Image (tube, rainbow, N blue to C red):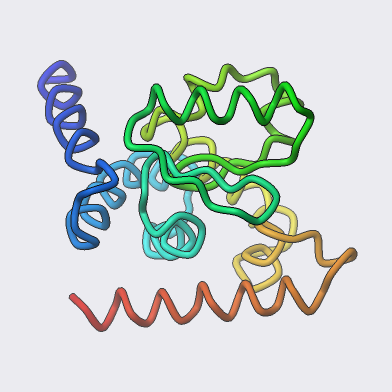
Length: 173
């Protein structure tokens, strides 16, 4: 059973390529997020909305100093992220836009963080930590993206954008 699940997930990740439609990317993102959300007790719709805000559900998108790069493959994404890491730049990668801070702090290999299933799990784990710290509220959502003590207005704007995505997701069902 586990082998079949992995095969299905591998096919879904392949479908999540950058050229997939938004609906296909959303469906794959939901499948990737389901397990981590169950494991960490995070509402799936919240994780899905954050993934929409962060990456538009693109599996290998990279943001380097505010500029999006949209690699067409994991291998290309690893090359771009590795160059940013060597240059000491701050960057975010993948579905949940894991920041280079976390990658450096935990010594995670870029190949691991850019694997869409691992990226989903890491992002939900980070979100779960913020929910434990602040409760299931806008502060936890804001802190996923922006330390509120550094930029409260940016954090509130981010939380509002995620809330809009939650409404859009609910309305599209």
